[in-house]
Length: 489
Ligand SMILES: *Cc1c(COP(=O)(O)O)cnc(C)c1O
Image (tube, rainbow, N blue to C red; front, side, top):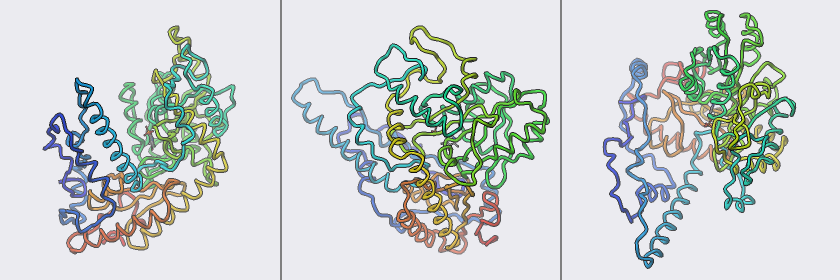
């Protein structure tokens, strides 16, 4: 039995490998390509009556619903035939696999709501570049001997972000990463190199990559409690700082947490550090802006992420709000830190200050292209639209009596976890405990939200038609005021 009492559908038990040379198309492709409408009645739900008490109990021994085992649907690689005659067949087979795959992509893109990815972009003009192996290995600011690179685009993009986060061209260093995680790994590494015996502080709702960094670097890591909004609880932070006053502090500050879209109060974090007697050379702040790092600057009233404040680094994901066909991210830090920790590599004729060696040279061009097309004004418009649509969704959920929360600076709507894992999979919702969320990105229109709401309402009328089965209580996750369970509505 699982988290909110769904059957585990990971398929791990029947995970035998599809028999070597398959010629027929895998089931997943056929199914997903043709499935376009949702019939809640066709869905097998195995509801288990849940009372408030058992809800809590289940949560304590929480198990996690894992995704399907891909080995049952994978596309086997088949060796080319020895005689050239049948090559044509093989090519036709591969073309049909790709055509069907494309159809699933179209369908899956249409029904995506759970991850903070902007799926709406048009990079047609860049198709001509896919014939090139563009690689920015080494430092973005120092050319290496490998000439097929895109550093001129990369540095242009970095300058744009440096301006956004208010640091002079002469004072910053940064690079285009493979993802937000790499930004966190880099920022926390810089923190540790600057303060080698520092303790890492991060709220318990920080992204898992932050705790991964602590394990990788064998750093002492202190988890800080959170408020019900998901923000770092600075009272708890203070207690924990005071208990470790002898050691410097490296702090991960969330500019949008993954699950609730909560923004840690950067100014209060700095104030707390100062009140606890930490001078500016005894702390290092990394801002994890993977999610909202690019949205916050465009929200009026939002606290500012700025290098005018005593912060060490900021990172953001490029494929989230901006939208990009490949994962990427941006990391900006202070040049003085990098000069202290990097080394020159003769083989590259460049400097080694990045986490990865080879670096995707296409990603900077995509970012450059999109920033040029949209600019500050374009992003501002999109952010406003996302916030409006997020409010629309939250209001609609509350209207029909579904627990829901939306943080003030956020476009992440947290709500009751749908009872049917097939529904969750169909809309690609990310779930944790009794919560699911929708991150309203520029491609999420009110029309799409309406479709989702209709299916959710229809689904619930079936999942909860038996009075013994009640929607879960979310008081612990989103607060009593936002909870619409039988007890709190
Ligand atoms: C998504 C996310 C990350 C990780 O970013 P990736 O680009 O997926 O590696 C880190 N922190 C937060 C808050 C995120 O939402």
